[in-house]
Length: 384
View 1: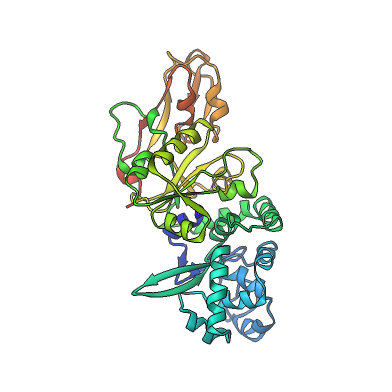
View 2: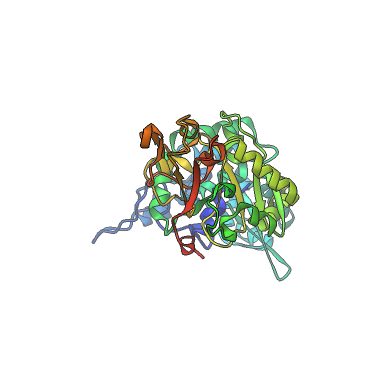
């Protein structure tokens, strides 16, 4: 599935098949007068050129996706590919034909085509088709590697354990570095629209049901985050792919076709399970509707660590009517973001506006209908 990976692509974090400049783990671009420019490994550019043939292929692949300095990403590549496959991946930075890869690597064209199909199934190679010509390019960044490899049919226990280690030990800090380079947040929360106040403007890009109903193609895959962790026990096959992402998932065999009625029922079930709808942070949604839990999902660590540009709220915000609130505290347990506390009028619940992400999960379970979502941000809050 393509979750955060799709969003990062939308946010512009790769250029010509490479991570954007400076988008590497533990590395800040630096120039000083009289000194050679340093590379992510700390050596000068000349030293890098002299030593490149000695560099481990898996370390090179880690650097190529912006993870220089990671201890675990090279291990992940090593668990997925052999040296021949690694050589092919290194040759496929920008979209290239099988013939061009063969020329770069010395691998026969027929063998390149065979390897490309295997790597496509693994989630390491992607296809670009134009004017009847198929070109191939490798995985571009860590989030894409995470999302694509974790849901492969043959994903090994070793691979998933490596990802679990990475998410616990490296991702929280790395995700803050990603956020620092972002021109805008790549993802945003979608509200549970049955909790929105009557008369509010619910535009098509605000409405998860409208996105489903207007989709050309839908598929469902496993949630990559819960495929790796899954400690929450929440539903696994609930990541809804939209249009091109659906085509990709079905071609690769990681997703099954999803009818619109089934998709809408799946969304209702996710709301009952306390999962937050998340999608692309733009007005034209064409990739995915994630249904995120509060402990496995890779989207929340950066947000909770204060990287505010990682996930944007919806255009709505929860408000509580103290006359209707029964002080049952159900909403406190439901909120991922600690945005509700007791202490309002008559010791009722009260919303912390700066923390509320406008998902509506609290309102969906309020037994007295004391909570509604109010429109607090204009339509142009969501980028075009």
